[in-house]
Amino acid sequence: MSWPIAELDAVRRLEVLAAAVPGAFFAESVVDAPFDAVWAVAADLEGELPRLLRNVRSVRILSSEGERVVADITGTFPLRERFDVVLRPGWCVMQSGRVIGGMAAVPDGERTRFAFLGALRGPGTRTAAPLLRRVGRPLGRGLLDRLRERVAG
Amino acid sequence: MDRTELVRAAQRGDALAMQELLGLLTPYVGRLCGPIALDDGADATQEALLAIFRNLRGLTEPAAVFGWARAIAVREAVRVARRARRAVPAELADVPAAVDVELGVDIRDVLDRLAPEHRAILVLRDLEGLDERAVADLLDVPAGTVKSRLFRARRSFRKEWGR
Image (cartoon, rainbow over all chains, first blue to last red; front, side):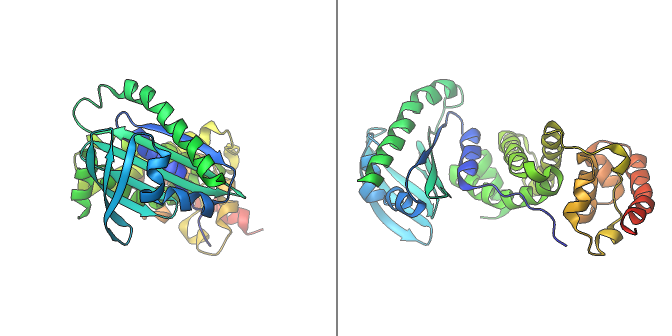
């Protein structure tokens, strides 16, 4: 005898996380490439994140132990932030004092469902949540477009 | 980080704590929502987790997070299952006794015959091991209602599966 168990894939879990973070924006799409090819790009934070996100200039991994990573990210959000990162296949959440980011991917046959979340931390984000979500949407769409280009390239 | 600290960090908006808590709660909520919402189990699990994380700041006893999440998950699972209109007619909606379930009956067949509210009683009693009083409190129904459903079930369910 076994009870039915409901499972929630990583993209749907990231959507839960996005709903729980004030002002977070969330974008989801299907990428026409297998999971391994998509995640190879997404998980290469040093090499690919500056190509995927226009407001990131460089990423430097400072330490990596299991799924825990510490990275220095230089960008336009403030100029330089240290991020604590959880990175494993299909799941990445990163956080600095002022920024939160996340990516999730699940296989969908020969294609891949991919999702991205972004948010600012700190005072005022709860009040400014509707504005932050609106402002963030193009960022999410841009990342998904560039991810497709990088995977195809 | 122990569980209380983890919940407190998540309540403060620490996204890494939130994702870790989400990782701990998702399988538990899925085990509760699966047998109640059946084919809509994934939707119910997501709705339940959304409700849990949206209300997390209101949780006053972080150590009790699983019990608190259980109440939300069961309510959301019943709501999603009702919305899906897959409830079965009331005459078959008696809850089987635990002893019958343990005989090796296909649990999915049993659950398909039950209304979502009755599946919730079965899950809370047999899967979670709650007593009738606790089940009644959690589902906000009189203890007598839980008791009578269980009593009727011991007769009718044995008859159903004894054919």
